[in-house]
Image (cartoon, rainbow, N blue to C red):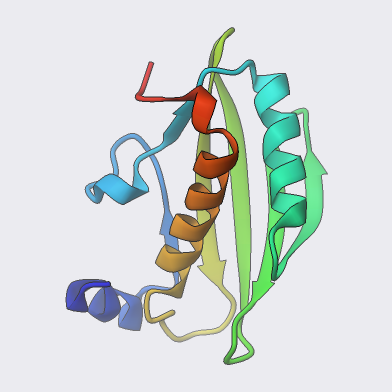
Amino acid sequence: MSLKRSLIGLLRSHELTGDKAKDPLLKSHYYKLSREKAWEEVVSTLKKMQGYKVLHEVQSVGEIVLEKRTVTGRTMDITVSVISVNPVTAAVDIYSASRGSFGDLGSNYRIILDIYRTLDKKLAQYKTTGI
């Protein structure tokens, strides 16, 4: 992890992904799956991830809310969104925020990369670049 990331993390206590992200690792991830199928896969994968607790699943809007406690005792709130791009492609975006007033020292960034890595491994055969 870069020094720049840690410095940003001193001040910022959230991180999110999207198509317009400057950091290539924070770009939306796309899968050749219908939203329904992607939803099932993502939810079942997240439920098996060590250290994460699924709090809410709202399939109608495609959001899964997770919680993760860090080693230092901080709590991170993570929202994973499964969005339909077209009938055969779904995108997954992640928003992670720390509770409390200080920066996160890059832990939200690491959490997002961890979730994406796990999803990409599980859904490797469906991974695609954009639309």
